[in-house]
Each structure stands twice: as C-alpha cells, then as structure tokens.
Image 1 (cartoon, rainbow, N blue to C red):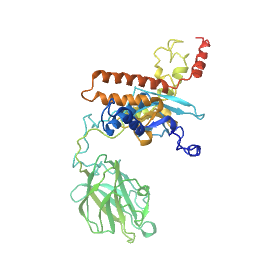
Image 2 (image 1 turned 180 degrees about the vertical axis):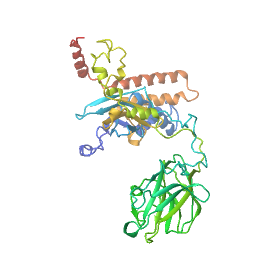
Image 3 (image 1 turned 45 degrees about the horizontal axis):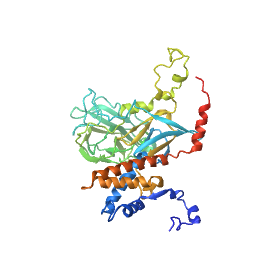
Image 4 (image 1 turned 90 degrees about the vertical axis):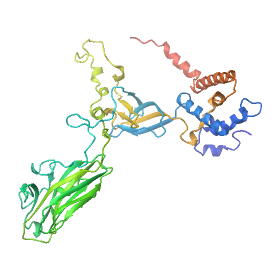
Length: 468
C-alpha cells in the first residue's frame, strides 16, 4: 500500500500540514527498526520497545543540534527593559537579527565584554549585608527628633493652619512627638484629613509589625497608622470631612475618640518590594467650633523575617550601566571619521580596532541563570528575530525525522543498543559505530541542500576583479 493512498489532493491542499511528506514520525522509526533489526537470526534478538524509543529520542536530540535544519524562530519588539526571555524549548541559538522597515534582517553580534552578575548586598562601609535584623525599625526619623523631614511627606493645601502638622513638641515624658493640628471650622464648617507618609523597602520580607503610641484625645477624630502597597495622590490633597481617607490595603491600626495608648499589628508583605507607611488624622466631619491636637509617637515598622542570603534580586550595576549608556556600536563616528586625529592618531590606519565593535547593528549577551537575552540600548524598540535550536522532543508533532537522515537514525539506534549490551563481539560494535558515522556524514551532506546551479552562480562571481 502506498504511503499516500489515504490522503487525497483535496485533504492535503485544504489542510495546513504542507510539506510533511519529507518527514517520518519517530513512532514509525521505532516500529520500522523493531521489524528490521530485532528478532530471531537478526542482530538484536530481543529488546523492549521502550529501550528502542529511548535510543531513538537520543538520536533525534543529537541530530537536532548539528545535522537537521533549525526551523524555530521567534519575533518580538524589544521593550524598554531591553530583555527577551529564552523560548520554553530553547537549547542554543543560531543567530539574532533585527529587521528594518524593508524587512531586511541585520545581524546582532554577541558581546563578551559585559554580563549581569549576581549583586551582593553591602552596607555603607562595604560589609556584606544580609538585610534588616528582626526588631530593626524600617522607618527613617521615626522619633521625629529632626522634624518632619524627608523621606516624610505631608498633606498640602491646609487652609487655616500654616502647617497642618507640628513636630518636636514635647509630651508628658519629654519625648518628641508628631502633632496633628486640626484647624477650627474649615471648608463648610468641616475639618480636613491630614496625612503624613513615607516609603520603605520591604524586599524579601514576609511579615512586618507596625506599632505606635497615641496620646488620648477628646476630639472627634480618628488617628490611623497603616501600610499601603501603592501611593495615592489623594494623600497630598485637601480632603474635607474625612472623605477619601485611605484605610491602607495591607493593614492598619487606629485610635478613635477618647482612645490612646500603644497598638500594633502584624502585616503580610510577601511579594512586596516597596510599601508606604501612612499616618492619618481623620475628623468625623460633624463637629465645629474647635481646634484639635492629636499626638502620636514611637511609630515603627519592624522586620519579622530572618535573612540568610546576601544575594539580592536587584539588577546588577553592570547591567544597569550597560542598558542606559549609549552603546559602543552606536558611536559610528569612531569608525567613519578616520581623518580625525582624535580617533585615528595614525592617519589612514585603524590600529587597535576591534572588529566585533566595528558595526552599528548592536550587541547582546545571554544571561543563562536568568534565562534572558540582554540587548544594548540601540536595540530598544526594534523588531528582533531569534532563530534557535531545540532538541525536537518538545511536542509529539516535532518528533519526526527527515527522510534524508532516516537510515542514519537506524544506525544510531543499533549502535546505541549494541554498545551497552554484554556478550556482543567488539568487532560488531565497531562495525555499527563506523556505519553510524558514515550515515551521519551522508545525512549532513544531503541536508546541506547544495544545488549545482547555485554553486555555479557563486563561482561565476569569482571571475570579478576586486581592486584593493
């Protein structure tokens, strides 16, 4: 029965599996091998199908690396981050190019002059830093001894007070405190929400403990200490009568009217990198004719996580500098302005020129640990094409062999099986080793797809004289 007896022209040309006749599935390869090589009076008397399939898959992997043609490509527009994730079935690359408006591809060359090393955390003295110790306060100027200075910020637009917050006010114990001065009868007879906030780094932390102490007040206000995952512009604007007060999406503690003392709460900050500490003084919007003063002190956000790793998830300084600076390949004057003595002290001679940088297409390197391709800055926004090699075992549809290499696969399987079996004469093993080598070489020649007419056209160009 012919191989095409079950496929009509209509089924083929109205389908999408064009050109598939040039391949043989790996399942057929295994079946054909068992029929031809396994059995009584054959080179292999008995073997499990699973063993044959293993050697067939290994042969397919090895042939995919340097014998079969690679047909896998990906095209992306390079983002501002200047990185491209490696494909899920990536083994090695063939080439990287970017295409211009005419669809012409320009080769991007790899660079060995940079990398993205793992960044180590260090303190101000250069010592290795493991992260905040349990009990360390992550808030800067938490005691307000230096006033309400950066990185603290406060609500703007207070109408009836020169400063909506007062600091360095002594409480009963003589400590410095943060005092909220609520002005008397603001807009429409109502008072305003006052806020102070600060951004803190919680990278790598799982939980933090927030706490503060408030002096009891008889005013109709609520004082709240909270953590927010995002900055809200409403903190910086006048909020009338408590409207728009932010409860903090990560967690909070609060003191209502006539309430004081210390309060704390444990808050989950897993997967957060930066959060905002927010302190608010919120009026109830009904009382008028009075001016409130609420004091809060000993504000803290403390780490509740033990760090044992000095490595950080941040980008390395090397990579940050590489992607922000103008790449050497972009400085085309370095290579074109050869008459300028600043570039070429020896006129007419390009001494010291590194050919890998004597091009304007850009460069890249592959960060194997992160699984990303990093591009130079002049590749940003360009359409990049990655042609790469896989091992042909990603999906069932990929597990097929070109008919030019079918015999080589059989010899590879036979040698793989015979070389690991006991009591096989060495001359038999060596014979199949030589046959495997010969068939592999023949497959490479066939798959190189050399055509006489094309070679002839290339040789015709050799007759042209090139003047130097």
